[in-house]
Length: 185
Image 1: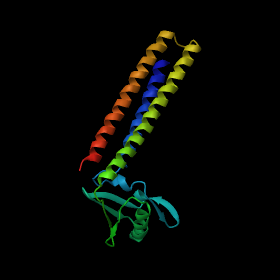
Image 2: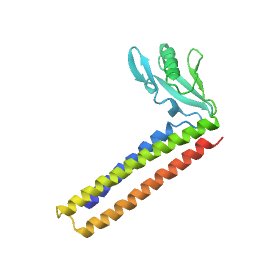
Image 3: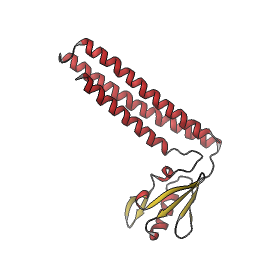
């Protein structure tokens, strides 16, 4: 039973790391990435629709994105939605595609991005610690119900702490790599 709890905790901690990786992809660096416009919602025929359902987004080079709408009549709606999303981008419309030039980051903006990255990183670390706390409480419950011995619970708790430390270390290394990417000019 203790192994099942540890496996469940490990699975949930891995999901927290995956969520962190996804969140970090949306943090802007000096390079153009389709993830930068992933959260844009377009008002399309009266209903809010995610951009990735209306167009394909690709990085043409390190400084620009190309957005190719599946329906050319939606190009103006997509243009408006990108401007309204307040991402700091001004798309140019060539009639069939939108080109988005990603401006270089200023030093102050890079520092703001690093602060935002640290905030996201801490939120995900808290999620991992919450998983640890929940699993630890369940282990103590097993000990109280006499479903597991004190030694089994102690060993499982030690393994849980090592698992938590390893996952938080992985998050910190991912965050450090992203921070270096943001600060690189």
